[in-house]
Length: 427
Image (cartoon, rainbow, N blue to C red; front, side, top):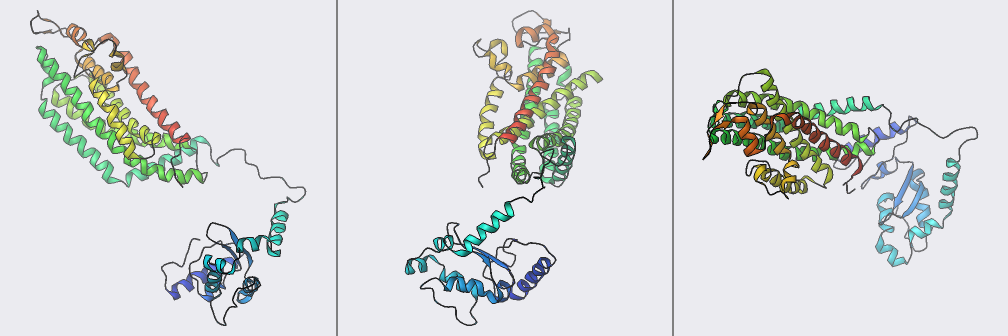
């Protein structure tokens, strides 16, 4: 117990310590720090472990009736003043063992204790208690943790479930932003999905996909960082207590995020898909939902990963902004892949946003043979225009689908193993 009487009046402190004393009398051991105890509270203790500034022990032993053993020990030190009758032994003990008194008497109470008979008795007791009884074996546990991996995952998942459910600000703002942004973008790009007969129409559609994924995706990345940073503080304490392995904790947090992101994506996809006016086919809607879902997942995991790799979420936010700028630049909207200098084109493939825009546009209009009017050229089919001008090839769509799974798994495992191997706790 850490200072159980702090902030209490004399009566309340006495009641608390009487309860502690009753607990001890049942055969239990209570280790307790105490601050300015009264005589009655101090004498309720059986033994005292006293340290001076710097952590050096100057007394470790029984108090005795009316603290007589403690008093006798310190009064035996030459120059230490005798305790006055009725004076609080705890107050007297702190006064005569202070740094000023040590300097005045030219003594070191830690050295006196180290050379005392009390110290030798304590060392002998430690040695005796450390020697196992003949015929006994050391405690052995077949596993590091009390539960198997699956049970740990299940327990961590329900813990995260309740934690997220009790954080309505985070999830409420998430869904409000999703609905609000979905409506705004739906109104701005109203019925653009059916207008693919001009080059500008296709560029408008490309801009719609670019805005839809980057705006809300970046919001997810930023919002999740403070939540993960707070949860990580709790995780440090529970990991130190040996409650569970880091990997079940990481997988559980990703799993609960995946549930909320799935619901968020469903709302967002329905709003955008219907208002933009894409072709009403189950397969096309599923592909649209899949790419938006995986996009929001890797954005969220990207934010979680940065928190796991950095000391705090402020530092993570700086790194987040740096890389998001490059994701934005090489997304294929500001400058198409076909026009990026060849020595920089590799970074297009290293931008997850580029893969998402590739998948969204190609899955919706990449197979269409409708003719599109282009500036200064004869009309060509939509699919040919996308391949020639933007580098979007419909036959490459399966690889784009697989790449999204790869991005999600990459950020997931870096987050999980960052949580496992990196510890930024200062205490």
